Length: 313
Image (tube, rainbow, N blue to C red):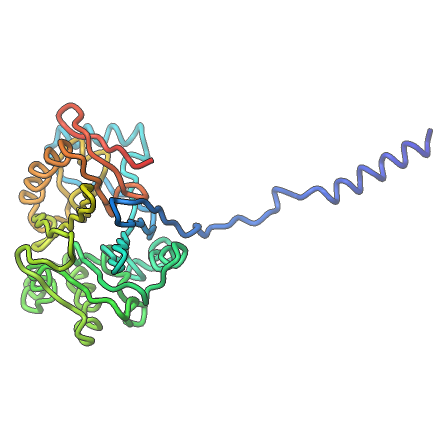
């Protein structure tokens, strides 16, 4: 009997050594690169994850009563202002077109700047990108165009941006007169554009001239002077890349009048939403949004006095 007890004890000791010590396993803080792919007619559209983000309450501006209500909701729901940063790749079958490039290294650390890695995970390389369409020149949308050393991430790409946008942020004269808190936007835009300008890869457009077959330029003024959307159509299906028309998904869709401190012209930004959102809610148009929760692809529906977001499945 004693031998059996000793044998059982030895067996338990051996098994305990073979059982993994779960508590001692190191934590892994790196996020898996993400992409989400779908078809719009003959177009292949891929959302490219750059970062998760949280919008701050004091970045939003509105009537006191409305903002007090938002603050109370935030106390109950800490995820109310969860956001993201992503770009989108459109494969037309002839060209690879990137719409916005994420933040790159402009915010430091490992939280941002994963778009190029996500692009590779999706089966493409930066060298394959033919065109980059820029919605606006804030660094969380164009920072990914350059490396930390200022080299072009997309060496073969032609970059297109609205002339009003380029003229504003790349102007030393306007920058010199801008308030201190706006200076980083001018500095980043000028540094990011420089290597593409030097290489003859920086192009501007005015109005609605054609850049790509099946794509329409959609001016969306207010957030920045030349803030622009791009609507692609294929086989009766449409997708609108709307840039920063909406930042805080669960707040600004319910209250389109709420603006962001980053808006160059807040009144115009609110007016753009008030004109665009009803139109999109009444049509079957897919929306690609850089700051709505990944993958930032979905449709709008009217809900009460505001709108709701129906993400793609």
